[in-house]
Length: 83
Picture 1 (tube, one colour):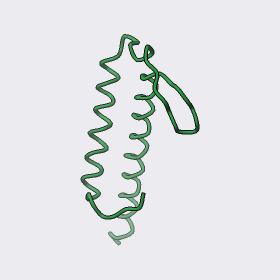
Picture 2 (picture 1 turned 60 degrees about the vertical axis):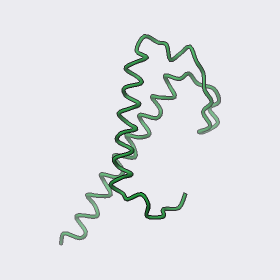
Picture 3 (picture 1 turned 60 degrees about the horizontal axis):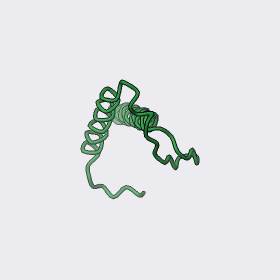
C-alpha cells in the first residue's frame, strides 16, 4: 500500500476518526453481549474466528493507534519546521 497522495492527509485523518466513532457506536449498540453470538474471521496474526464484539474492539484500538501515530508525526513535523 504505497501512498499516492490521494486522498489528502486531512481526508485520511477525518475518515479514520469517522471510522473510529462508528465502531464505538457499534460497540455501544451491542452492549448486551449480542456480539458474542456471531463469529468472523480475523486474518491478523492468524487469529482465526473471533466474535464480532472483539473484532469491532480490535478495530477501535487499531484506529486509535493510527490516530495517535498521526498526531505524533504531526507534532514532530511541526517542531522540525517551526525553527
